[in-house]
Amino acid sequence: MLLTTDSINEFDREGFLVIRDVVGKNDIMKLREAIDLELELRTGKKFSYQNEKDGAFHGSQEMWANYPALDKICRSSNLPRIASQLMRSKKVNLFFDHLFVKEPNSPFYTNWHNDLPYWPIMGSQIISFWIPVDTVTRESGALEFLPSSHKLYTDLQPDNFASKVNEIPFSKRDYPEENIKCTEVDVGDIVAFHALTIHRGLANNTSRRRRAYSIRYAGDDVVYSPRPGVHKMMLVKQLHAGGEIDCNRYPVVYNSSLETHL
Ligand SMILES: O=C(O)CCC(=O)C(=O)O
Image 1 (cartoon, rainbow, N blue to C red):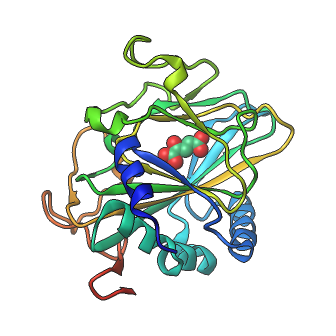
Image 2 (cartoon, rainbow, N blue to C red):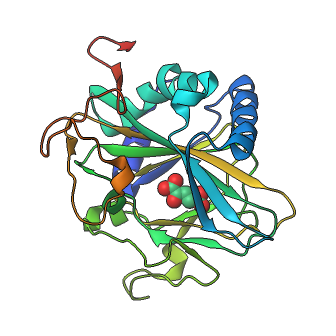
């Protein structure tokens, strides 16, 4: 799948892009199977953002190495190539995968934040693909974005990652509420966004689970940057501050000059 120049320019300008019909039915089925197994087995790093008995918001991180189907989707589907196009990067590293589950009637927002302050890397070419395996509407926990907020070059790491109330972190004059963009998506669609774009997830006010799988990719200019505030469990001893991130944990998965997956 090739993106149009208009789509790539839109991503540059807005900091996010909904891409329709990217993930095939077969891959969605495999994703659902792996996600449901992961929720039983917890092979990845488990997160419990809010663990109320009813309406929990939870997930796992770094699962691809444990599930061949996830490995295939992260490394050898069309996604690394799309990442290369959107980041305008020759090289694509798989940074990590991240599951977000909002149980039925979960009252919790994923609070306004951007991702880079949590991660021990730096650079302008860092992207996430948020892949729903359930239809996601405003009522069931869609993602919302502050358009062009990646260009503010600001870190937004809220005290609580999830809560029942969530206010916009800027003055209403700078960001009138009508500028907020909600992304409702169908199964097969993905939401791409830059690591500095400010976003949140709405509560799930439906009787269905909302399962979404985020894949994070990094490009040519990305370097290792262990610094205060990043997740310690993402640090890698063998990497050096300011050096490239290529390693078994953050492997190179695509190189456009070779036109191939690695
Ligand atoms: O799924 C959600 O509610 C939040 C997702 C998110 O923040 C992310 O993928 O970076």
